[in-house]
Length: 265
Image 1: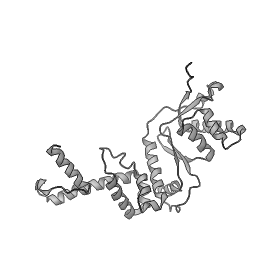
Image 2: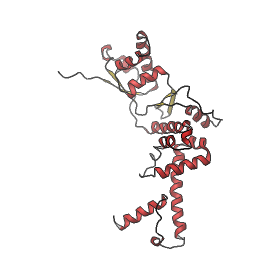
Image 3: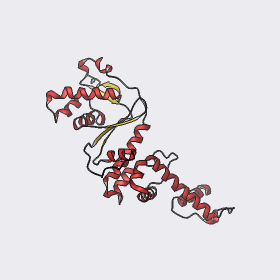
Image 4: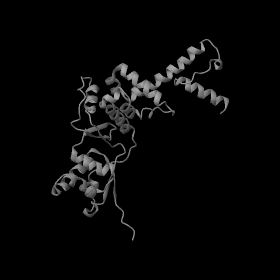
């Protein structure tokens, strides 16, 4: 390691709260070296805290100043920033909150963080053309069973065990949030619409099964119907599946259709 690299490494360790930077390495100027080093260290932690608050404004409000400061200090110590962009600095926030006390005692906190990070990912996702229902109407009926849906890159399926979304909505509206509780609608579908507005809505159990098959497992249409048939009468499955498809097209979350290729002889 070169002398410059050693100097930079020791300085970084200092601002992160680790090994002290030798005062003999500091050039004395108008500001005392101890004060100068403290300014850099405080600025480092303040900037990271600002980045976390920008990503999680509702979570910071929900926790309050004291718990938010505790979280920021602990998270920054465990996951110091290692890249130039701060976009993904908080990517492990939900995981950290789920594993570290006192936050582990309240699962809604980690799930509130999961929801806010999902909103970030939806907003930042790549774009793609969107298909309308006419694309399905133009297909031959024999092509439907092997058809695979390609969802818009912004689409996310989030399953939560608590009422974190209801708490988030209340705090966004600046009203008293409900007490933490089990979720009455655990699944949420999130996406970005054509106007670049982030949308989300609850998902009923039947649609969750269909989305799991089509979005998560990338099954074809016949596989999607098979998943629905596990919990519903066979005669009701086709209409149910087509209804979900029509809704997804209307919401603009389907960007392509792909048929299963025939096996080579």
